Length: 635
Image 1: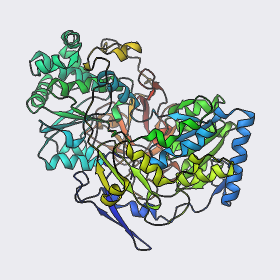
Image 2 (image 1 turned 180 degrees about the horizontal axis):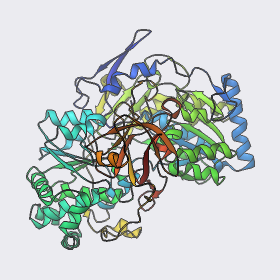
Image 3 (image 1 turned 90 degrees about the vertical axis):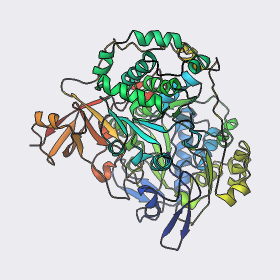
Image 4 (image 1 turned 180 degrees about the vertical axis):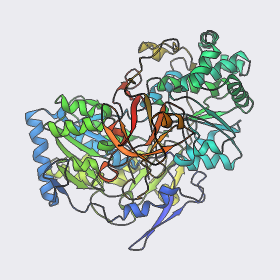
């Protein structure tokens, strides 16, 4: 159970000192192997760095934390929350969470307690909100193909992702079935090095390449015309729009030749390619619209849908949340707006679980200052003393998923799994913690003490799964057919949903965007996922991080940089001291750093530099990749 595409299945034995993991050999996705992170999960769960007792912070931001009893921690929590309710209002209590282990009960059951106290919650805009909105504009849903649903194709294109490191089971699934692999990326990644087809593009030019490929497909007649006309509205307008675009403008902007683009388009048409749309590139101003334009490509060659992006088999997560326990309307704050909300006095009590925002939020230096300089009481529930825990008033020790019961789904495939407790461990699960909190607050609502297996039974009813069958098998597949959700019931090139938000259906690429870069900060910073971590998870236990800054040889030469020397990567938000790696696979004008290492261990996180502006018209998507820096040699 982890927040990654694969959601692999395995059996676990505990011998008193080790966790022995055996991957399932019958599941077609897991396919009898675990990735690097999966193989080392036992070390993570049994780490000697695990928290064993609640902590009280004498001074936020320091390591002056004192062990206290569970009873004392619960009483401090209760009195602090009640004080905020009394003095500022219950909407000033904010719950900040994210996917964590993808356990449905332990992610969503805490909502019940905080709905009871009428707390505010975060809206998730750090990951894939922009692309989610963009796909809903076109298809009425962001749920596309699962890998087992792919038919009539023998080419999968990974657009803006590196599945050898982030979706290894999915990548292996297609390789075993003889699929050819295409890659679109700004660098020659591990996946690209072994791909059949590779287009290396300029950063943030995904939109332009999608339009270039569409123009070639349509104007060369390399598309399923009858299929497209039957299953869409507004295609004539899209075709007219493409006619008005210049091939030279598009090729210049995305950094590929016309010949390269045409060859790629022909192969895509001939093999009826499908596209796995990555999440990273959408975290920029043009990213969400790029997702929409990319999703048209497999439709043009005859797929409905032809994209892999998100999966939801329909488990009733609302049942777990218990929204009926509220006595007032809910209030939401975007994840990336946390610092601003604290600065404005909109958050006075902050409860954090399944998340590490002092590492993963953009512009974390601003967030640190907001917590230190404003009267906000912070509580974190985690397995480890994270950087977020260091800035908390109270820290509750959490359990790993080996230590509790849960059910889990995937945002990649259609299997629902059961997670059985393996050993007792330390701390409390999210489910256990909020049940205790309900007792300390004197709440008698039966929903706040509902048995976890009964919750699982109710949730599984929504997909006609019997919990006893699930327990016996370990996982079961939910057959979910794709359904268009647009008002027209068709793919919409001219989108009614976009119109309601005053968004043009087709981008005006003649308009020059006001670049966020300044003369002082000319290099675009791309913060990528490290293959040894899942965002900030495992950064502290696996001990293998690559903290270097990667730079193109010409950019290095301009700055007089040589391989391995110490440099300062900086902008107006912060400064990072690290070593440089000269990488000729990177485009000029960009640098790469891996994201979400812990400052308390590595000395920094790249999010000390990332910009915190958002793409408001597309779910307020956080635009991490619209960040610019300079790199200088350290004297």
